[in-house]
Image (cartoon, rainbow over all chains, first blue to last red; front, side, top):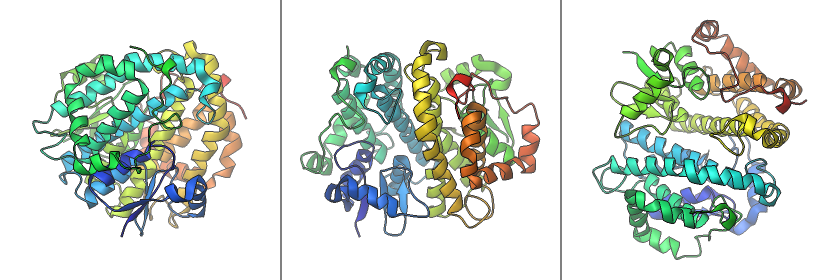
Length: 235
Length: 235
């Protein structure tokens, strides 16, 4: 049976980390709100009771509903062998995925620093200030951490010699940052060759390549989490 | 053997969620930086290599180092039976803990909206705006979610009839919000009686009561994540 994935239908956003893992592993799923629209997603959330999600994305397995990206990926990792099963490796991957989640939250905060529920246009001066510190201090710190994480493994991937859900997530981080900060990333990326290598290897997974060329992959846009506003970028 | 816990020694911060679970379960640990100071913590971080933490808190088990609050708590939950072992319950608790982590990040963002590495005094007007939306929109949404989560279980706690690391985390959320937003919480709390009940039950766990009365519990202050700035509070 195919999973039901529920997420906003017009953006990559946080849902993309789940989509990529499902696609790379060729796990059948239906991206439900692509058909039903935002209204369908909101109606589905309201109809649920008991152990409900706080926000999309969430995965309906038929028997239960799982929310929070790192939690969904951990489930898929265990259930579909997308991650090593030993405790040390499992915890390390989850730790990295949670650090990716922290980065994603900081990226969102760049264009929505003072009012998450308002428009970017209502907080442009504040966003400019947030972007400067993010570009200059936070971004190199995160990228350096992920570079070190890849380097810490003698194999080709983050762990051993096979990709995990955390490798596909690193791909998405690099793609998103290149879209949002093309000038800054051009300056920084040469310092992180192993991270770029993981990005390239993920792009070459046949199922990922097919996905990226399909209309299932939503293009980056300025409604998502990674947003290209040229005024927030700089070398 | 006692665990080594590493976290900033003068604040509750994110480390407190780990301290509370360890204390409630009477698991031996040494809060290392309470002796060595911030310098000791920074020296320890710099001396590590391989699978290193991005930031404190982290737990050194003797054989490995585990970072990210929800990840540490999941480990303690499995290793010391602080959480049910069935997959559905494990995922549900982790999901709630990650939603608590999201709330904590938004709380920090209230007083540091545009420049995480600068002082609050350098971003007071922006913080006032961030605080208003947080108090009026985000806070009731989070509290309502946790209230519903408690109500979804027929037992006394979040799951079944015993406390888990996620119950001690909800205690900390209520305590922190009462300190940071006393006026707002006075208005809101009557709407969330089950959440308040969990807070009270955790405070009555004998080991927690002993901890709260000890000098191991650092007082809330305006260096931590929950900060009381009266100008950011309102009914």
